[in-house]
Image 1 (cartoon, one colour):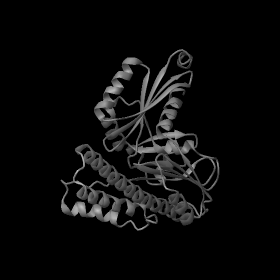
Image 2 (cartoon, rainbow, N blue to C red; image 1 turned 90 degrees about the vertical axis):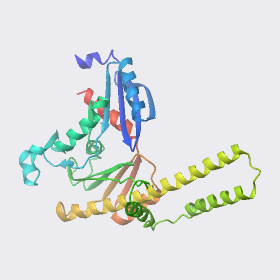
Image 3 (tube, helix red, strand yellow; image 1 turned 45 degrees about the vertical axis):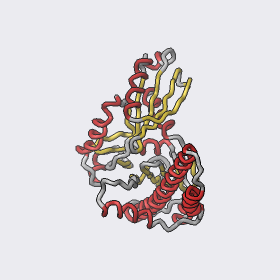
Image 4 (spheres, one colour; image 1 turned 45 degrees about the horizontal axis):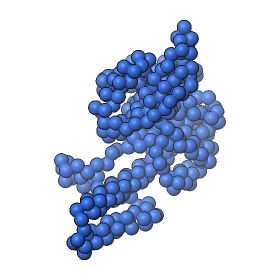
Length: 324
């Protein structure tokens, strides 16, 4: 009956994820499993709450979904409770999603805490990033799969064609210099950025020097109008923010490469002696070409990369749930 109703009823799918205090949102209107419209937004929390409220008033068949990036989750190459006990995971502390001949698990404490935080948004579906990666399985033996986002990375390794043998997750630390932090805390954050040694392109240095040139030009020309000064000030702030973002992205790429290398090492030492041959990286945000090149050089994998829209992926998973 439910599937029959879908031919006549429009459904609204809302996917979102959060970076710092920003809510990235996609809204799809669906009928007969076809997308009638798709829009993307960037909201504050207050704006997002109002957006959901209006969406429910417009259509009661509205479903809200997101992705959970907490630790204590992963994949196991079986649905058997005995297999979980064998590898030292207490089944009473986790929730298990069985998918044919393997399963995805998440800690009950982390899931409950996350669901409490999401209650105000009336979230219907919470998806593990490992579920997304498992849907990307190319049915190839000895293959690595990576999901790279601005917040976190998820990694799966398949020894066989149809079930993952290894899983791992990494969360990026958001590097922000805060005046309220102690001097030691701020120095530690600044040292992390200073430790980046892999800058081949001198454009960043030239950008910084150009900011000094702008300051000098302001001193030399005292006849500038106030509007011109405001415009120059905005340009300086924008360039400064761009440089900071580029530095953080670069640090994340270095951390990501270390995470991939350490995961592969762990896999070889504790899970399998069969060498990996291929790798797939699915990324949601812009990543440098050097990042992919470094992965190939450091892991000796034949690498393929694909840019994806994580909001599309979340809504696709929600649609699959509604069609079950």
